[in-house]
Structure formats: C-alpha cells, structure tokens
Length: 226
Image (cartoon, rainbow, N blue to C red; front, side, top):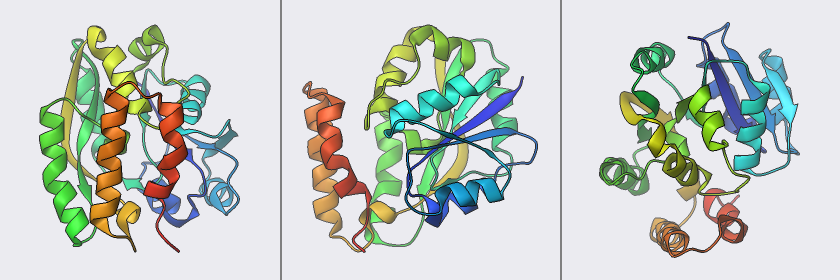
C-alpha cells in the first residue's frame, strides 16, 4: 500500500519545518498553500516537497492535495502537528484490515499550560462520543475518500463532515501516538474565552449553521495575539 501525505498551509512558516522534518523521506508529500504571505512556500520547497496552490480554506486545500496525490491511502496532516516516526507503519498496518476505511491518532497538545492540560484530558472524551478532528491526523483509503466525494470546501468542520459521510464505508480506528500539535490557538489569550467561543461554534454547527458562515469567526480563535 502506498501512502500520500497532504498538508494544508496558510502562513505556517513558524511550524511547518518541524512537521516536514518528522515525515520519512521518500513518501509523497504535498503542501497545499492557500496564498501565504510569509515564508511557508520557501520552507516547504527548501525541504524538497511538492507545493501546489489552491483556493484558501482547509477543506478546499486538502481536497486539492488529495486530487493531486497518487497514494492508495491519504494522510491529512496539519502544518503545526508533528507525527511519530512509526506513524506511517501504523497506518499501513491498520489499513491492512479491509474492514477499516479510515482512522486517526491519539493527540497531545504541546506545553504545560492550563489550556494544553485541559484539552489533553478533553480530547479522549470527545473521541469516545465520535468527535474526531483534523488535527489528530486523519487518514483514509483513496477508494473510500473518492466514493464519498472527499472534503467539502469548508473553512471549518470539514473534518466532522467528511467523517460523517465515511461511516458507511467501513470502520474508523484511532491509533496510539501521540501526534503532538501546537497550542498556539490559546497562546497569549484567555483560555476560557477561546474555549467558550469554540463551544459556541460547535453548538451552532450541530444546530445547522453552515460551516462557511462559522468560518468567518474561526481565524480569531485559531491565531494567537501577536
């Protein structure tokens, strides 16, 4: 089984290098740039990976990367998330079971802040009720991905939308990791305010508010105060 790695990026100069350095050489890796204004493209090209341009928006960027890739399975990795060295072997082993359509990894937020410690406790509970997010490194068989139409061009909640549509295709498995992701979304901010906004967005999404409307507020949550 061949694997392709797709990394959406938009102004990710700060963390992209660490993510790419953790990817084993020889694996097809595509960075999909959404019109960055910093050194994101330079960082990616300096490490010899393929860079393509796409309409800005995580769902659109990941779908563009999937279409440009050639692997039997696709691993969608966020630009600020660092995988373990054995992650690709674990994915291949999981997809060796024909009943498995997709999966993700256990996730740890970096740092010792209250926000990181709180989310490190919360995420396993959310996974227990079926809420799994893109920063946990979602991987999927290409055949299943293509049958359900891939990622929608949503700026947020594209992950929950895809996983909902993948359910009829087979089992979803969570592999031990952990992947380590940045805690930047609550750096320099009041964590209670950031988390409260995130909860409100979740409620609105499940109440039927379109992700494109919610996406207008997403950047204020994700990016730290400079």
